[in-house]
Image (cartoon, rainbow, N blue to C red; front, side, top):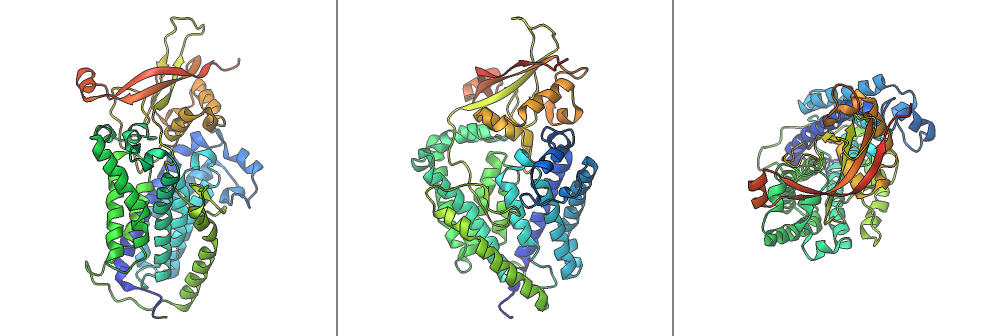
Amino acid sequence: MEWFGDGDYWLSRLVFQRALAAVYLVAFLTAALQFRALIGERGMLPVPGYLRRVPFRAAPSLFHLRYSDRLFALCSWTGVALSAALVAGAADRIPLAAAMACWAVLWVLYLSIVNVGQTWYAFGWESLLLEVGFLAVFLGNERTAPPVLILFLLRWVLFRVEFGAGMIKMRGDRCWRDLTCLYYHHETQPMPGPLSWFFHRLPRPLHRVEVAASHVTQLVLPVLLFTPQPIASAAAAVIVATQLWLVLSGNFAWLNWLTIALALSVVDGSPIARPPGQPGAPLWYEITVIAVTAGLLALSYRPARNLLSRRQRMNCSYDPLHLVNAYGAFGTVGRVRREVVVEGTDETRLHDGTVWREYGFRGKPTDVRRLPRQFAPYHLRLDWMMWFAALSPVYAHSWFGPFVERLLEGDRDTLRLLGHNPFPDAPPVHVRARIYRYRFTTWRELRATGQWWRRTPDGEFLRPTRLRR
């Protein structure tokens, strides 16, 4: 079938696949380095207990067959190694079926992790990686021209990511409609980056321009992705530029980088480099791609209807395989930043003069003198959930108690997730958590104090607690 492949997108496919493999690598590395404290056998939300409660059909995972921390580590590091091989271009040096198998293995491994990850993996970019990763299985390699049906489905994903985010904003917080949300967002976002202070201090008229540009990018340009070239490429280029702006202004794990990869798959690479000679696709491959496309289009009904719904849901998966999902972010923007500050003391009896020492986190604000750091695309899962905990204790009811218990035990895996342990020799006797209001300092305050943040007490999150003897 002559219409099946389009060689003009061979370079776009190459760049997209390398970028996707790099995102997979970061995702598997994040899992390998953090899982023991979060979901391991002695973790805050252990996988074995979850598997006893949830059947395979509700959360398909290899770990339903057997779970151990050693097996989880093997799956994670296998994902890292295979991702690195695909970043290096290994898939283009092997037969088509073998290349598809490599991408399928990555997808199955990461699906197995996400479906047992519970709260720690309930982020929209997990489903996005799985949806895009599934499509990558059928995108082919240099043995065949990129299939136009899969290229279309990648645009359909990008459309839902951008348009869904735009619609959730227009239906949500009024500040998106009056163009004032960025008066607050750079300061109150989950994990500010090293430039967020400077973004927050931009003139307010420029903030209004930022919001207006965001509306255009998310509500107008996604429609242009389905127009002829070079219009579609131009729309994708603007989306890439917008995502890079977001990369500079905050830490959103691999969401922005994966969106960039999707946008690059839209770009017509033929003006840059002529496509190499590519043989026709084998019949079995064409049949498989057509069948998969038909199935995914049928599954797209619910997320498509969600885009038009007044009760639009964001970051929602409609099936346990995460094949076609709904996306969106920041329908509501906080005006005040609250942080949960965790403290401990080695004093056995508490009194008014008790000395409390703070635990430091890697990414979330704690030390007011520390400039926020860049971690994305690496995902600091505990730090993100601490931000949610400050919004409402409801977000922390399942894991915060076990977290405090492990601090009181001096659990090494948990302490490795932190930036600073104030009790290096022995664990504390008591731990407590308090709420503080944080705000960025002004230019004058920064020069006078060297502090990037000012904070004031705002209540108690957890009363002093200790292990039962």
